[in-house]
Length: 263
Ligand code: NDP
Image (tube, rainbow, N blue to C red; front, side, top):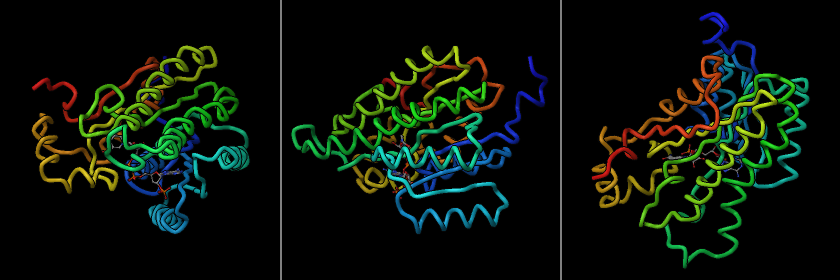
């Protein structure tokens, strides 16, 4: 067993965090970089990405970034080529599949077009599957790989208000994490999911703006508040640390008690 200092250190490791220009992804990028990890991130909006990269630079954080739409396979391949070059073929410890969204928003299944369905599956689930597949050789090479999927509590339970497709992408993600944890354990790669409840980001805005829905959700959360992006990032960082070396195939809720409440 490594000594205490080694168990709580990621100094010098390398990481890919998708969707790091804002929200939860940005908090993860900053948290990991503060642990001394060299982080590469991506998003679609170049201006927002560059603003974020400049802010990281001014904080002396080792963060690079490139534009990538993770729902597009050739762009995913280009991203992995970049990772290979930037980190000299060594995606040391972690890959955080964070980029995602709710697509056309909260609406019933009967109103989904097949294009909306396909786009949401491609952004949330296909990206996680294919990026993990593409990163596998680099993670294996490191001998201490860690993959974290940013899932959702909606991956294990449903909302009547209409998030069936979003929930399905996250449920599939949870199962993929369990399957990869078993399949890749021999390659010394751990795979886990962090499942946030409601977190204060742009993605959660439609809920905060709908007074009735917001009140209803709040009454179900024992801590009576939404989470902050940093509160999700700290769990992701923990899962990437050597201190978490025995944790794989887990889906960990970070939700203020939301899923523990039956009332
Ligand atoms: P935000 O909308 O705040 O941020 C999403 C990030 O992902 C942005 O950087 C965005 O940049 C990027 N992104 C989105 N789509 C793509 C794409 N196709 N390719 C590349 N980058 C993309 O969302 P959150 O921070 O709230 O969400 C992050 C993750 O957490 C998601 O997977 C979400 O499902 C999950 N989650 C969020 C919850 C919440 O309440 N906020 C609750 C449970 C889970 P850009 O748009 O420029 O591409």
